[in-house]
Length: 301
Image 1 (cartoon, rainbow, N blue to C red):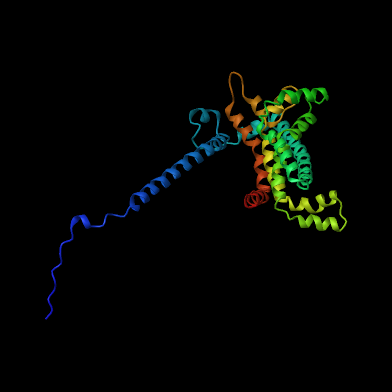
Image 2: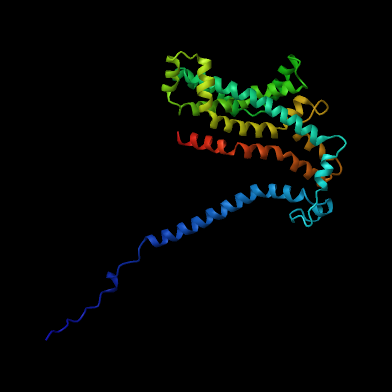
Protein backbone atom coordinates (compact mmCIF):
# COMPACT_ATOMS: atom_id res chain seq x y z
CA UNK A 1 0.00 0.00 0.00
CA UNK A 2 1.43 3.27 -1.08
CA UNK A 3 0.87 6.49 0.72
CA UNK A 4 1.00 9.83 -1.01
CA UNK A 5 3.10 12.46 0.54
CA UNK A 6 1.30 15.73 1.15
CA UNK A 7 2.40 18.59 -1.12
CA UNK A 8 3.75 21.60 0.62
CA UNK A 9 2.47 25.00 -0.33
CA UNK A 10 4.94 26.99 -2.37
CA UNK A 11 5.67 30.37 -0.83
CA UNK A 12 4.30 33.32 -2.73
CA UNK A 13 7.76 34.87 -2.99
CA UNK A 14 9.09 31.86 -4.86
CA UNK A 15 6.49 31.99 -7.68
CA UNK A 16 8.23 32.76 -11.00
CA UNK A 17 7.53 36.31 -12.21
CA UNK A 18 5.86 36.81 -15.61
CA UNK A 19 8.24 36.86 -18.55
CA UNK A 20 9.88 40.21 -19.10
CA UNK A 21 9.40 40.10 -22.86
CA UNK A 22 5.64 40.61 -22.64
CA UNK A 23 5.80 44.42 -22.22
CA UNK A 24 8.50 44.59 -24.92
CA UNK A 25 6.32 42.70 -27.39
CA UNK A 26 3.40 44.96 -26.47
CA UNK A 27 5.52 48.05 -27.21
CA UNK A 28 6.66 46.57 -30.49
CA UNK A 29 3.06 46.03 -31.57
CA UNK A 30 2.22 49.64 -30.78
CA UNK A 31 5.36 50.80 -32.59
CA UNK A 32 4.39 48.79 -35.66
CA UNK A 33 0.91 50.35 -35.61
CA UNK A 34 2.44 53.82 -35.26
CA UNK A 35 4.73 53.20 -38.22
CA UNK A 36 1.76 52.00 -40.26
CA UNK A 37 -0.25 55.11 -39.42
CA UNK A 38 2.71 57.39 -40.23
CA UNK A 39 3.25 55.62 -43.55
CA UNK A 40 -0.44 55.96 -44.37
CA UNK A 41 -0.45 59.69 -43.61
CA UNK A 42 2.72 60.23 -45.64
CA UNK A 43 1.24 58.30 -48.57
CA UNK A 44 -1.95 60.35 -48.32
CA UNK A 45 0.06 63.57 -48.40
CA UNK A 46 1.72 62.51 -51.66
CA UNK A 47 -1.36 61.01 -53.31
CA UNK A 48 -3.87 63.75 -52.47
CA UNK A 49 -2.55 66.33 -55.01
CA UNK A 50 -2.63 63.69 -57.75
CA UNK A 51 -6.16 62.71 -56.76
CA UNK A 52 -7.36 66.32 -56.78
CA UNK A 53 -5.80 66.93 -60.20
CA UNK A 54 -7.41 63.86 -61.74
CA UNK A 55 -10.91 64.29 -60.33
CA UNK A 56 -11.08 68.04 -60.95
CA UNK A 57 -9.94 67.64 -64.55
CA UNK A 58 -13.29 66.00 -65.29
CA UNK A 59 -15.59 68.33 -63.33
CA UNK A 60 -17.18 71.64 -64.16
CA UNK A 61 -16.18 74.95 -62.62
CA UNK A 62 -19.19 74.96 -60.27
CA UNK A 63 -18.47 71.43 -59.07
CA UNK A 64 -14.83 72.28 -58.37
CA UNK A 65 -15.73 75.36 -56.32
CA UNK A 66 -18.48 73.54 -54.45
CA UNK A 67 -16.46 70.45 -53.43
CA UNK A 68 -12.96 69.98 -54.90
CA UNK A 69 -12.46 66.55 -53.27
CA UNK A 70 -15.69 65.00 -54.54
CA UNK A 71 -15.50 62.52 -57.44
CA UNK A 72 -16.65 63.73 -60.88
CA UNK A 73 -20.35 62.85 -61.04
CA UNK A 74 -21.09 63.04 -63.89
CA UNK A 75 -17.64 63.29 -65.54
CA UNK A 76 -17.08 65.68 -68.41
CA UNK A 77 -14.43 66.06 -71.10
CA UNK A 78 -15.10 69.74 -71.74
CA UNK A 79 -12.05 70.76 -69.69
CA UNK A 80 -9.70 68.85 -71.98
CA UNK A 81 -11.35 70.08 -75.15
CA UNK A 82 -11.40 73.67 -73.88
CA UNK A 83 -7.71 73.46 -73.01
CA UNK A 84 -6.86 72.12 -76.47
CA UNK A 85 -9.01 74.72 -78.25
CA UNK A 86 -7.55 77.81 -76.59
CA UNK A 87 -6.75 80.57 -79.10
CA UNK A 88 -3.18 80.94 -77.81
CA UNK A 89 -2.54 77.17 -78.27
CA UNK A 90 -0.81 77.13 -74.92
CA UNK A 91 -1.02 73.35 -74.56
CA UNK A 92 0.20 72.44 -78.04
CA UNK A 93 3.04 74.97 -78.02
CA UNK A 94 4.05 74.18 -74.44
CA UNK A 95 4.08 70.40 -74.97
CA UNK A 96 6.08 70.61 -78.19
CA UNK A 97 8.63 73.05 -76.75
CA UNK A 98 9.04 71.01 -73.57
CA UNK A 99 9.45 67.80 -75.55
CA UNK A 100 12.10 69.32 -77.82
CA UNK A 101 13.97 70.82 -74.85
CA UNK A 102 13.91 67.54 -72.90
CA UNK A 103 14.98 65.38 -75.85
CA UNK A 104 17.79 67.72 -76.90
CA UNK A 105 19.10 68.10 -73.35
CA UNK A 106 18.98 64.39 -72.51
CA UNK A 107 20.54 63.34 -75.84
CA UNK A 108 23.48 65.62 -75.07
CA UNK A 109 23.85 64.85 -71.37
CA UNK A 110 23.76 61.04 -71.67
CA UNK A 111 26.68 60.53 -74.11
CA UNK A 112 28.75 63.32 -72.55
CA UNK A 113 28.18 62.02 -69.02
CA UNK A 114 28.81 58.38 -69.98
CA UNK A 115 31.97 59.19 -71.95
CA UNK A 116 33.41 61.36 -69.21
CA UNK A 117 32.57 58.76 -66.54
CA UNK A 118 34.26 56.04 -68.59
CA UNK A 119 37.35 58.20 -68.99
CA UNK A 120 37.29 59.00 -65.28
CA UNK A 121 37.01 55.32 -64.33
CA UNK A 122 40.37 54.64 -66.05
CA UNK A 123 42.15 57.33 -64.07
CA UNK A 124 43.94 56.94 -60.69
CA UNK A 125 41.76 56.86 -57.59
CA UNK A 126 43.11 60.15 -56.20
CA UNK A 127 42.30 62.07 -59.39
CA UNK A 128 38.89 60.38 -59.60
CA UNK A 129 37.96 61.42 -56.08
CA UNK A 130 39.09 65.01 -56.70
CA UNK A 131 37.05 65.32 -59.90
CA UNK A 132 33.94 63.81 -58.30
CA UNK A 133 34.31 66.24 -55.41
CA UNK A 134 34.23 69.12 -57.91
CA UNK A 135 31.16 67.66 -59.63
CA UNK A 136 29.40 67.34 -56.27
CA UNK A 137 29.21 71.15 -56.20
CA UNK A 138 26.80 70.92 -59.10
CA UNK A 139 24.42 68.96 -56.88
CA UNK A 140 24.90 70.97 -53.70
CA UNK A 141 24.65 74.52 -55.09
CA UNK A 142 21.01 75.59 -55.60
CA UNK A 143 20.14 76.42 -59.23
CA UNK A 144 18.87 79.88 -58.23
CA UNK A 145 22.37 80.83 -57.05
CA UNK A 146 23.95 80.32 -60.47
CA UNK A 147 21.00 81.53 -62.53
CA UNK A 148 22.25 85.11 -62.93
CA UNK A 149 25.81 84.10 -63.97
CA UNK A 150 24.29 81.61 -66.42
CA UNK A 151 22.16 84.32 -68.01
CA UNK A 152 25.19 86.63 -68.22
CA UNK A 153 27.20 83.94 -70.02
CA UNK A 154 24.34 83.21 -72.42
CA UNK A 155 23.96 86.94 -73.12
CA UNK A 156 27.68 87.17 -73.91
CA UNK A 157 27.29 84.24 -76.34
CA UNK A 158 24.12 85.79 -77.85
CA UNK A 159 22.12 82.74 -76.76
CA UNK A 160 19.80 84.42 -74.27
CA UNK A 161 16.06 84.14 -75.02
CA UNK A 162 16.72 81.11 -77.24
CA UNK A 163 15.96 77.42 -76.86
CA UNK A 164 19.59 76.63 -77.70
CA UNK A 165 20.63 78.67 -74.66
CA UNK A 166 18.10 76.82 -72.50
CA UNK A 167 19.45 73.46 -73.66
CA UNK A 168 23.03 74.60 -73.06
CA UNK A 169 22.11 75.75 -69.55
CA UNK A 170 20.60 72.32 -68.86
CA UNK A 171 23.70 70.53 -70.12
CA UNK A 172 26.09 72.68 -68.12
CA UNK A 173 24.07 72.66 -64.91
CA UNK A 174 23.62 70.13 -62.14
CA UNK A 175 22.04 67.62 -64.51
CA UNK A 176 25.46 66.68 -65.86
CA UNK A 177 26.75 66.15 -62.31
CA UNK A 178 23.91 63.74 -61.60
CA UNK A 179 24.65 61.77 -64.78
CA UNK A 180 28.35 61.54 -63.95
CA UNK A 181 27.65 60.28 -60.43
CA UNK A 182 25.21 57.61 -61.65
CA UNK A 183 27.49 56.38 -64.43
CA UNK A 184 30.59 56.44 -62.21
CA UNK A 185 28.86 54.28 -59.60
CA UNK A 186 27.56 51.85 -62.21
CA UNK A 187 30.94 51.50 -63.95
CA UNK A 188 32.40 50.06 -60.75
CA UNK A 189 30.24 46.96 -61.28
CA UNK A 190 31.69 46.31 -64.77
CA UNK A 191 34.74 44.00 -64.65
CA UNK A 192 37.89 45.63 -65.94
CA UNK A 193 38.84 42.43 -67.78
CA UNK A 194 36.17 43.18 -70.40
CA UNK A 195 37.78 46.48 -71.34
CA UNK A 196 41.26 44.99 -71.17
CA UNK A 197 40.28 42.13 -73.48
CA UNK A 198 38.84 44.54 -76.02
CA UNK A 199 41.97 46.69 -75.84
CA UNK A 200 44.19 43.65 -76.42
CA UNK A 201 42.10 42.78 -79.48
CA UNK A 202 42.97 46.17 -80.93
CA UNK A 203 39.84 48.22 -80.15
CA UNK A 204 40.39 51.89 -79.47
CA UNK A 205 39.04 53.80 -76.50
CA UNK A 206 36.13 55.29 -78.45
CA UNK A 207 35.12 51.93 -79.89
CA UNK A 208 35.36 50.22 -76.50
CA UNK A 209 33.15 52.89 -74.97
CA UNK A 210 30.51 52.81 -77.71
CA UNK A 211 30.33 49.10 -78.58
CA UNK A 212 31.09 47.46 -75.21
CA UNK A 213 30.55 49.87 -72.33
CA UNK A 214 27.41 51.68 -73.49
CA UNK A 215 25.32 48.48 -73.96
CA UNK A 216 26.29 47.44 -70.43
CA UNK A 217 25.18 50.86 -69.14
CA UNK A 218 21.63 50.47 -70.47
CA UNK A 219 19.95 50.26 -66.98
CA UNK A 220 21.96 53.26 -65.77
CA UNK A 221 21.08 55.15 -68.95
CA UNK A 222 17.38 54.48 -68.38
CA UNK A 223 17.69 55.74 -64.79
CA UNK A 224 19.47 58.92 -65.91
CA UNK A 225 16.98 59.47 -68.74
CA UNK A 226 13.93 59.13 -66.48
CA UNK A 227 15.23 61.41 -63.74
CA UNK A 228 16.61 64.09 -66.07
CA UNK A 229 13.52 64.06 -68.28
CA UNK A 230 11.24 64.62 -65.28
CA UNK A 231 13.45 67.34 -63.81
CA UNK A 232 13.82 69.23 -67.10
CA UNK A 233 10.13 68.79 -67.95
CA UNK A 234 9.04 70.17 -64.56
CA UNK A 235 11.62 72.96 -64.53
CA UNK A 236 10.03 76.39 -64.25
CA UNK A 237 12.80 78.78 -63.27
CA UNK A 238 15.18 78.28 -66.22
CA UNK A 239 12.52 78.57 -68.96
CA UNK A 240 10.91 81.55 -67.24
CA UNK A 241 14.12 83.58 -66.96
CA UNK A 242 16.26 82.28 -69.83
CA UNK A 243 13.52 82.28 -72.48
CA UNK A 244 11.54 85.15 -71.02
CA UNK A 245 7.73 85.39 -70.88
CA UNK A 246 7.48 86.90 -74.38
CA UNK A 247 10.05 84.85 -76.33
CA UNK A 248 8.90 81.30 -75.69
CA UNK A 249 7.25 78.97 -73.26
CA UNK A 250 7.27 75.42 -72.01
CA UNK A 251 4.36 73.55 -70.49
CA UNK A 252 5.27 74.67 -66.95
CA UNK A 253 5.33 78.33 -67.89
CA UNK A 254 2.12 77.75 -69.84
CA UNK A 255 0.41 76.51 -66.68
CA UNK A 256 1.67 79.62 -64.91
CA UNK A 257 0.19 81.81 -67.63
CA UNK A 258 -3.16 80.02 -67.26
CA UNK A 259 -3.56 81.40 -63.73
CA UNK A 260 -5.42 84.69 -64.02
CA UNK A 261 -4.55 87.75 -62.01
CA UNK A 262 -8.09 88.39 -60.74
CA UNK A 263 -10.03 85.23 -61.65
CA UNK A 264 -9.06 81.74 -62.76
CA UNK A 265 -10.92 79.16 -64.79
CA UNK A 266 -10.04 76.19 -62.59
CA UNK A 267 -11.79 73.68 -64.84
CA UNK A 268 -9.64 74.63 -67.81
CA UNK A 269 -6.54 74.91 -65.61
CA UNK A 270 -6.93 71.34 -64.36
CA UNK A 271 -7.44 70.26 -67.95
CA UNK A 272 -4.11 71.82 -68.91
CA UNK A 273 -2.43 70.17 -65.92
CA UNK A 274 -3.71 66.69 -66.75
CA UNK A 275 -2.56 67.08 -70.38
CA UNK A 276 0.86 68.23 -69.19
CA UNK A 277 1.29 64.97 -67.25
CA UNK A 278 0.47 62.62 -70.15
CA UNK A 279 3.90 62.59 -71.82
CA UNK A 280 6.00 62.13 -68.62
CA UNK A 281 3.79 59.27 -67.42
CA UNK A 282 3.96 57.57 -70.83
CA UNK A 283 7.74 57.93 -70.92
CA UNK A 284 8.12 56.48 -67.44
CA UNK A 285 5.94 53.50 -68.28
CA UNK A 286 8.01 52.85 -71.40
CA UNK A 287 11.29 52.85 -69.43
CA UNK A 288 9.96 51.36 -66.20
CA UNK A 289 11.69 47.98 -66.47
CA UNK A 290 15.12 49.44 -67.28
CA UNK A 291 14.64 52.15 -64.64
CA UNK A 292 13.97 49.63 -61.86
CA UNK A 293 16.85 47.44 -63.05
CA UNK A 294 19.19 50.41 -62.84
CA UNK A 295 18.09 51.25 -59.29
CA UNK A 296 18.40 47.69 -58.00
CA UNK A 297 21.76 47.13 -59.67
CA UNK A 298 23.18 50.29 -58.19
CA UNK A 299 21.85 49.33 -54.76
CA UNK A 300 23.53 45.90 -54.69
CA UNK A 301 26.97 46.83 -56.00
